[in-house]
Amino acid sequence: MSGAARNLSDAGTQTPAARMLPAIAALAGPERMAQLKGICRNVVDLASLDPASIVEKFGGALILLEHGQPGAEQVVLGLAVDKPDSAVLMVSDHLPAHLVRALMKIEASDILPSDADAGDILESVERIRAAAEAGTSGGDSSASAVCWAFRGAVGGAGVSTLAIESAFSLCEKVGPGKVCLVDLNVSDGMVSSFLEAVPKLDLAALSAAPERLDARLLAAWCWQHEDGVATISAPRNPDADALATEAAILRLLDVACAEFPFVIVDMPRHMMPWTKPILGAVDEAIIVSELTVPSLHAAADMAREVDMLRSSDRKAKLVLNRMFPKKRFRAEFAVDKAEKAIDRKIDATITSDWDAARTAVNLGKPIADVKPKSALVADISALVDSLMPDEAVQAADAAQQRRSAR
Image 1 (spheres, rainbow, N blue to C red):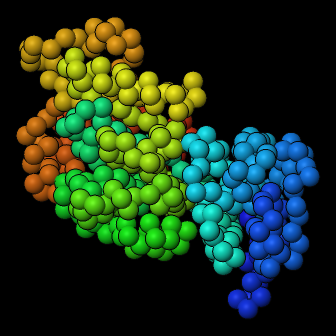
Image 2 (image 1 turned 120 degrees about the horizontal axis):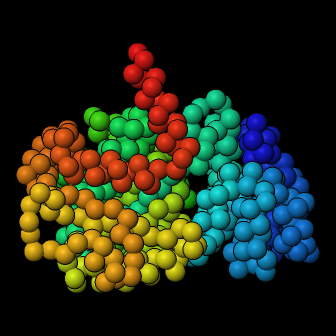
Image 3 (image 1 turned 90 degrees about the horizontal axis):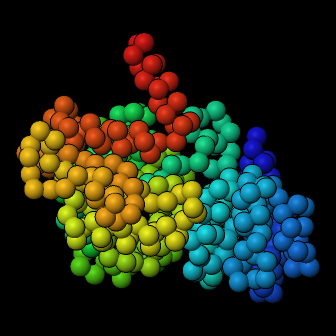
């Protein structure tokens, strides 16, 4: 049993009437400490310890940290590196990107709003206990989820199409039921229209109580395509941006990453409160543009902005979409010249196939179903292969071999 599951297992044996945690270590203010004493038999106050000592002595246990308390950030960063098998409850309304990334590396974690009550804390512990134990039950998805975000440098760059096609290409490699496509263009997203999907995400309910979102509610908000990709999208609403708070969207992605091994995010081009935290935390941030001078400069600027949110070895990827087929001569300059112009590597190019794309959206299918031999489909497959981590590639190859042997 993993460290987090082992340390939380006792909490799951309590009767609903008792609902008392056996022990918790906390770095929090006086009001929160008093709250914890009402739901926990043994509350350890960490205020007198330095961050390194907290990580060493309490790493692997259940820890509650209140953002803003001296040393809380250092504890999260230390646990992510030295004791990732910990279970961490983070209390914050505005969590910086680097802490979001650190929490994603910790085996069991949850983010609670500052006004969370005792019941919210108990429910959170129950959720992460169940998730931690599920990871030890012999399933094939014990590793952390892989999350990619697609964002356009200019309007009309085909970001939604690339996100959709990447999700279905990935599903073809790893198997059905393992990929979730999240459309965060909450006011006017096109994923549901392109796939004839049902937009089931209730943004009003999510924003009113993000901490209430769990696996069962997420399942109710998912729509499953016949090819095996789950989609999460909201009905079109011009006022939806006001409902998409940082706490709500980060909670949505947190639960999605707990339930699916692979999560692909279709991001809006305009800046939202949660744009920077997501782009800083995801495994891959993909900037989509076209091969025109204005688009290239916009893409280079956006890529540099995203790089500032990420570590030096996790730079944003730059993808040029809607490229003309190589056999056709058009008035566009070569990719190597484009790279010199913006002083940045272009990581992938996607060939345009307007006829296939138009047919696909009219039928509510991915392009690979309509024209599997399209150059666009091949380019997307190559892009997905380049983004997949080595362990995911090996697992996908093994799954493909099993399917071929049947």
